Image 1 (tube, chains in turn orange, yellow):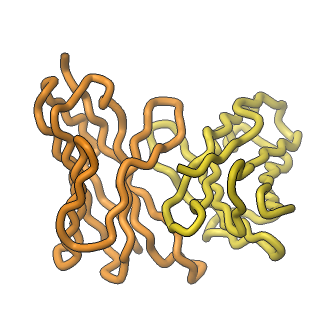
Image 2 (image 1 turned 180 degrees about the horizontal axis):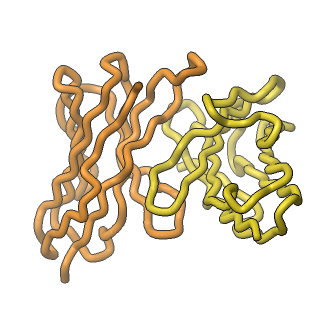
Length: 114
Length: 115
């Protein structure tokens, strides 16, 4: 079974700190990786995409990918209370239908304490 | 990013009735759209892939006769929950890949409550 694993949390960090969110995936052939933010009762919002090994930075967010270890992470610098949400890791995998589609992890709930 | 809309945002219906949910790509064309379901405190589960001009592709365990999908045009996909039951109550979300990218953009979701 192809899976995406995340620690459900909650991960609690003080305002201004760095939040580190981690994700592992089972499909070694995956090439596309995404981080989404989901506020309670809302749909997911794309934060970052990453396709190559290494780091990708966008503002306060840095995505890190290590395909050999099948590991993706998201760092949030200078965390703000408004960053409090559930962060979903998504990996483009082959589904049972033989087509590629996003498989989501269960999400990590982040709480930023003022 | 690309904008995807959904209608209605919230629907309450009686058991046994059918409910139609629309998903539209507002500023781009989408030959493929995806339908997800999310139960409380759970992650998104892909139900089916909607394909313009051909039949939808359903994931394992999803009843195609119960969840009817029609991709009527390059900007519209619909999901009809037929003979809805309380266990179908969930948050239904559609997505579409942005133009020239494989990044998925999500609609705002439809909260279905079946009484």
